[in-house]
Length: 91
Image (tube, rainbow, N blue to C red):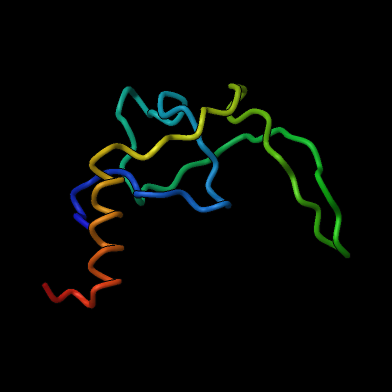
Protein backbone atom coordinates (compact mmCIF):
# COMPACT_ATOMS: atom_id res chain seq x y z
CA UNK A 1 0.00 0.00 0.00
CA UNK A 2 1.27 3.47 -0.90
CA UNK A 3 2.05 5.22 2.40
CA UNK A 4 1.45 8.62 0.77
CA UNK A 5 -2.29 7.88 0.53
CA UNK A 6 -4.05 9.71 3.35
CA UNK A 7 -6.84 7.15 3.89
CA UNK A 8 -6.97 3.44 4.60
CA UNK A 9 -8.33 1.16 1.88
CA UNK A 10 -10.91 -0.32 4.20
CA UNK A 11 -12.11 0.66 7.62
CA UNK A 12 -12.35 -1.78 10.44
CA UNK A 13 -15.51 -2.40 12.38
CA UNK A 14 -13.99 -0.25 15.16
CA UNK A 15 -13.49 2.80 12.91
CA UNK A 16 -16.01 5.64 13.23
CA UNK A 17 -16.72 7.68 10.10
CA UNK A 18 -16.32 11.33 11.15
CA UNK A 19 -16.82 14.48 9.08
CA UNK A 20 -13.24 15.74 8.73
CA UNK A 21 -14.30 19.37 9.12
CA UNK A 22 -15.21 18.68 12.75
CA UNK A 23 -11.60 17.60 13.41
CA UNK A 24 -9.86 20.66 11.93
CA UNK A 25 -7.86 22.83 14.32
CA UNK A 26 -7.40 26.47 13.27
CA UNK A 27 -8.47 25.46 9.75
CA UNK A 28 -5.78 22.75 9.46
CA UNK A 29 -6.96 19.36 8.29
CA UNK A 30 -5.65 16.44 10.38
CA UNK A 31 -3.40 13.77 8.88
CA UNK A 32 -3.44 10.00 9.34
CA UNK A 33 -1.87 9.22 12.70
CA UNK A 34 -2.76 12.55 14.34
CA UNK A 35 -4.39 12.18 17.76
CA UNK A 36 -7.91 13.61 18.13
CA UNK A 37 -10.45 14.13 20.88
CA UNK A 38 -14.04 13.24 20.06
CA UNK A 39 -17.40 13.70 21.70
CA UNK A 40 -19.48 10.65 20.81
CA UNK A 41 -23.16 10.07 21.60
CA UNK A 42 -24.99 6.87 20.87
CA UNK A 43 -27.03 4.03 22.20
CA UNK A 44 -26.08 0.77 23.87
CA UNK A 45 -26.60 -2.17 21.53
CA UNK A 46 -25.63 -4.93 23.95
CA UNK A 47 -24.02 -5.60 27.31
CA UNK A 48 -21.65 -8.51 27.92
CA UNK A 49 -20.45 -8.91 31.51
CA UNK A 50 -18.86 -5.54 32.34
CA UNK A 51 -18.63 -4.26 28.73
CA UNK A 52 -21.26 -2.10 27.03
CA UNK A 53 -21.25 -1.89 23.23
CA UNK A 54 -22.33 1.49 21.83
CA UNK A 55 -23.57 2.29 18.34
CA UNK A 56 -22.59 5.94 17.76
CA UNK A 57 -25.30 8.33 16.54
CA UNK A 58 -23.33 11.58 16.57
CA UNK A 59 -19.67 12.60 16.70
CA UNK A 60 -18.76 16.15 17.73
CA UNK A 61 -22.51 16.95 17.79
CA UNK A 62 -22.78 16.05 14.07
CA UNK A 63 -24.59 13.03 12.57
CA UNK A 64 -22.32 10.13 11.70
CA UNK A 65 -20.67 10.61 8.31
CA UNK A 66 -21.71 8.01 5.72
CA UNK A 67 -19.38 5.07 5.24
CA UNK A 68 -16.91 5.67 2.45
CA UNK A 69 -17.13 3.32 -0.53
CA UNK A 70 -13.92 2.05 -2.07
CA UNK A 71 -12.90 3.87 -5.23
CA UNK A 72 -12.64 2.12 -8.57
CA UNK A 73 -8.84 2.23 -8.28
CA UNK A 74 -8.98 0.57 -4.86
CA UNK A 75 -11.39 -2.07 -6.19
CA UNK A 76 -9.10 -2.80 -9.14
CA UNK A 77 -6.07 -3.01 -6.86
CA UNK A 78 -7.88 -5.47 -4.56
CA UNK A 79 -8.94 -7.59 -7.54
CA UNK A 80 -5.37 -7.63 -8.90
CA UNK A 81 -3.99 -8.62 -5.50
CA UNK A 82 -6.56 -11.42 -5.21
CA UNK A 83 -5.65 -12.66 -8.69
CA UNK A 84 -1.94 -12.55 -7.83
CA UNK A 85 -2.58 -14.51 -4.65
CA UNK A 86 -4.66 -17.15 -6.42
CA UNK A 87 -2.09 -17.66 -9.17
CA UNK A 88 0.90 -17.57 -6.86
CA UNK A 89 2.08 -14.38 -8.57
CA UNK A 90 3.37 -16.39 -11.57
CA UNK A 91 2.18 -15.67 -15.09
